[in-house]
Image 1: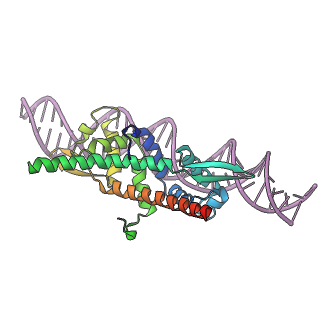
Image 2 (image 1 turned 135 degrees about the horizontal axis):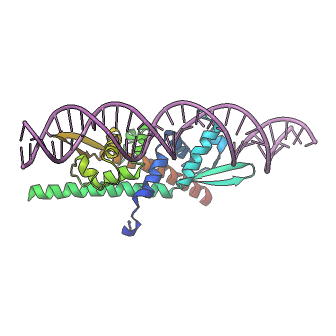
Image 3 (image 1 turned 90 degrees about the horizontal axis):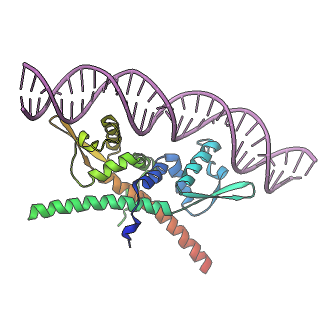
Length: 112
Length: 112
DNA sequence: CATAACCGCAACCTTCTGGTTGCGGGATTT
DNA sequence: AAATCCCGCAACCAGAAGGTTGCGGTTATG
C-alpha cells in the first residue's frame, strides 16, 4: 500500500539511478542481492578491474545507500540494502502512473 | 505474470539507469510523461540551463529510448516512451525478488 | 617473529559529462 | 522581402568518472 506522503524527490531518485547506471556496479548489486555479505577481494575476484576500482564503486553504492559496510577483522564486508531499490521502483511507478492517466484521459476524450 | 525469457541484460539496464541518473533529465521525463509532445524551447522554458544543454539531455534520453523525436515544421517535438521505464522496473523487480528469496531461505533455515 | 592477506590513501591519467557561447540555416510570421 | 523564431553544429571549458599503480598499515597465519 502506498502512502502519498512517501513520494520521492527527483534529486534523491537521480542519485540512486546514477549509482545504478554502471554495469560494474549493477554486477556488484546482483551478487550482493543474494543477501550474503562479501569482502572487497571477494567482490573483485573475477579480476575484470582492480580491487581499487571495485573499492570506488562500492563507495558510490554506499553513498547512495544501496550497500552498507561493516569492518570485520581485517576485511570490509559489504551487504545489500533494499530500501533505495524500493524507492527507485516507487519513482518509476509514479512516472508510469502519470503516463497511464494521460492515456486514460485521452481514451475518455475520444469515447465521449 | 513474469515470463523468464523477458529477463533484462545488465548492460541495457545500466544504460537506462544512466540516462535516469540526472536531475535535469528526470525533470524532462516528468514533464513529458503527461503524454504531450513538446518542442525544445518549450522544454527549456524555465531557463535553468541553456537550450543547448536541454538539447544534449534530450539526445541522451533518446539514445536510451526514453523519448522519441519528431520534426514538425521548424521545431523538434519530443515525446515520452514508456517501454524502457517498464524494463527498468522489471530489472529492479528481479533484484528485489532475489533479495526476498534470500530472506525466505534464511527464514526457512531458522524455522527448521 | 616473520610472512601473507586485506585494505586505505594518494597520485596520476584518460575519457566522459554537463554546461556555456557563438554562429549560421531553414521555417514562420508580418 | 524582412524580421523573427527554432534549431543544429562546433569549439571550448572545468570538473567528475572510471581506472591504474605504488606504498604503507593493520590483522591474521605459519
